[in-house]
Image (cartoon, rainbow over all chains, first blue to last red):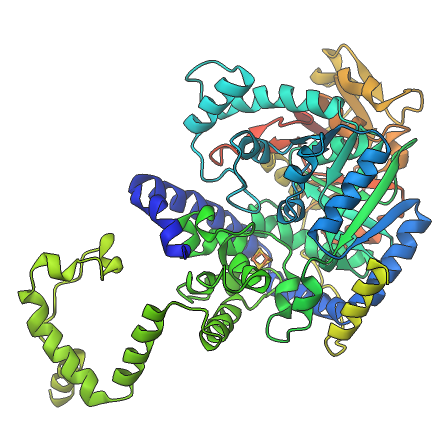
Length: 455
Length: 176
Ligand code: SF4
């Protein structure tokens, strides 16, 4: 079975590129830090966000019902989908009934989760992702590698070559401004000729029956207001009770995501455009199951800002595709095993448990605790590899017996320097593929401490 | 059982014990909110000026200027060649350079604020609030409403900021 380490291998083998990826994300993390530290009430905001979300989760059915009745009163048609397939059927049903063959989409991780694009394409609907990063990966026939920065794994030259091939830009041209301008013409054309627009949802407000979409490019607003049909797809955890709650989340989201004080557009859709119709599709797809789990339900508080990805030392150095799941990084590693524990058993281990994810999370999801809890569960259920279990039981035996630990160290300090390279760095040492063992010290820490104390 | 019922039932069964929501904290305040608004707007690629919007260069050099609210366009697609849209904003937000625009100020075709090549927002100079908590006190229940903070932008290619992604290439806020 391939797990995170195997999938990460091609990425880490290209060291300069992996290093560049690491730095790009750290740059975003630093922008986030600057925004967070500029607000004296930052921690209060996080606490409020956490409390509002937890309260909402305790009354989710009530708030969804309230949202629905207000939305219907606003002239919105509300649909319910138990799973990904039902979601796709609903969306296709709306399009097919109205003879729509061209759909423009703006960024929506939910439709990625449901694999909507292939479903619609197989039924003759042309789907265009209109967010620049999403369009880039769509043209490359790849999924996004990050939930906020879909093409963060690509260099400008890669995109220049892609656009030359697909959009007819000049060969070798790789200037971001030039490439963005080319995409602008291409995407505006798609937006103007679409029969329907689909957007994701950042927040749905129970009190108003409207949905809020936060974007920078303007494509979501064009997609929702040019064609006569707007379909907004949301996971059922996107609800917030009141309009005033939005202030808390809007203040946190963009600052945490990209280090902006707010996105360029924070759009409140409380009904269809003049002469048009609006649909909201509310999707469960496993969320109610997570809600039932005390240890893991907090992961539903996630507002998909991506901060935990940007800060994660493992994500930064292994890339989004190494996770093999729609949502990578710490939050993906918590969500994926709910869907299929066996297939995603390696993900909770793709973490150093440093806790940086929990520290930056704007809604205080206790990510590293959840990762640890999942490890426990996967081990108990026998979903981890036998090599890992063996290593763990050896470690457990040694760590429980100080004499064994001491003797082991003594032996290592003497034996390792004598061992030939091919023995030390054989296939049994995957750790050594990328790294060199440090030189063995002449004394153990205990020896040093003893000397220090007797001095 | 319909999907709606099934989902509702699952959620009620799974619901954690009740817990109280929180009141939003008191937001940051600035000594000079207008100066802060102007500074933040500049940092997100916009521009804040004081004066008469008719004298702006983008307005003077434009071929098609649309003053909103516009009720006459037959379809939103007719607005694709608007060079400059002039839109009344209700108020600005100092902490993030955003301006609140409700549907009524846009007119029949709400897409105008994002499809125009350039956007000019007119905001009363005494209508700058400090933060988003204050802002949401003033947000109504219109069919549609949007906070606009600067021009359309993207950093999807190597994190390089490019102004003018799919929407307006510039956003000028005129304080009046
Ligand atoms: S878990 Fe927290 S940090 Fe990670 S994406 Fe969700 S909200 Fe952001």
